[in-house]
Every structure is written in structure tokens, then in C-alpha cells.
Image 1: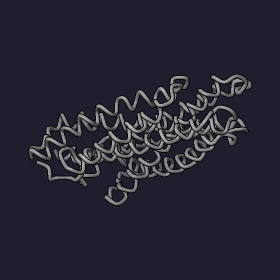
Image 2: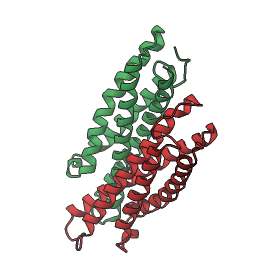
Image 3: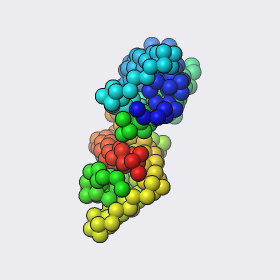
Image 4: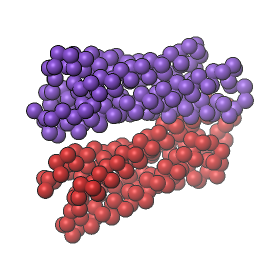
Length: 152
Length: 152
């Protein structure tokens, strides 16, 4: 049995990270989807798709963490941990890519005249910022879990 | 002494990865800089900056690897490895961000009319593709080195 690393699967720090991921990815999705025109831009569709993948993943793992914390029964099979680390990694890269694409497209639209009716572009930027925060938390989770992995 | 993990610092696989990083990041820089107008777009300036950081980093570590391979004297202090892992990670995230931003801006420019005189946009896309390859190799290096780190 590996010692308890804060932030790895089944600790309260991990539960906090998962909650943060769920909140920020939902916020990103909400900021993007209030506008009905997001599907006109590939980068925005990509962001919506990625966030739609991150939310169920983080919620499921958050439930597993909550179970481990309250029932005091950590799940630590190497196979399960590998799947979680790889999944976290893939999702963190996808959300970083989505955040960067959204930010740069929003920047280009702000620079061009007449592409931002109302305050739509600042909402796109907010959505990108939320996606960045989501990336950071998902990356932290994967680091902590990966640190535990070779010792199992 | 940890056992030899292929791809970690001081192995020939690592030397190959570093060579690949240097080649792809140089290619990305060349595709972008043949056009003199890249500094009109934030995303393209960012790509050039990041590639300008990746090239010296990968070349230096490639030299260290070449030294270790030919002189058979691997450098494996935990402090050095930590610096290398963190640096690789930061650079791989930066290059992923640059690649995504460049790709999405190139895509937007191709969709808009009259923003791509000649074949400039396909050169931007090629540059983004090279940056993606560079990200992938830099990420592989950091994974292999990180795998060794907890065992030191």
C-alpha cells in the first residue's frame, strides 16, 4: 500500500480538485452556450465538446472520491489508477487546446471590426479563462495520481 | 541507481526524442518566419517565441544525452532531473498552446475571404502541425523522465 499522497485518488484534496473541475467546466460551457452562434466557429464547437466530456468524467471521479473519503475505503488498483491518469491527461490536454483556441479566436474577433455585437467577445474570453482553470485542475489531479502510480 | 528506462535522460531513445524536437521546432519556426507578416497576429508571435525557447532547450539536453550515450556516464541527480522534468512540461504545454492557437487562427483566416494571399495559410497550418509534433515529443520526454523521478 502506497502512503497517502494529498491530491491522489480517494483523498479530500482530490475531491476538492474534482469539484473545481466540474464547476469551472460547467461555467465555461454556460458562458459559451448562452450565445446561440457558437457553432459557427470550429474552435467554439471544440470547446463545447471537450467541456461536455470533462463534466461527466470529473463528476464520476468526484463521486468515487467522496465515497472513499466518507467510507474510508480507498480504491487503489494499479489498473484503475492507470486508466484515471491517462484519462485525466488526455482531458487536460484537450481542455488546454480548447482554451488556447477559444482565446486566440476571441482575440482575433476583438481585433477585427464588427465581429463582436454587444459583449459577446468578452463572454468568449471568460469562457476561455474558465477552460484554462479547468485545465490546471485536471493537470494537477493527473500529476498527483501519476506520482503515486510507480509505487503501486 | 534506478534501472534504465528507455527515453529517460542519458539513453539513446532520449537523444532521438531531443533531435526530433529540435528538428520539428526549427521547421515550425521556418514555416512561420518565411512570411514577414507574422507579427501582425498575437498567436503567431507567441508561436515564434515558444519555438525560440524550445530549440535551445532541446539542443542543450540533446548534447547532454549524446555525452551520456557516448561516454557512458549518465547524469542522474534528483535535482537535475526535477529541473528537466519541470522544464519539459512547461515547454510542452507552451508548445501545445501555441500549436492550438496557430491552428485555430489559420482556420479562421482560411474561412474568411481575402485574408490568405497566395498559399500563406497552408504554411501557417504546416507550422502548427510541426508545433504539434514538437509538443508530442517534448511530452514523451517529460513522461519518461517523470517515470524515473520517484525511484531516484
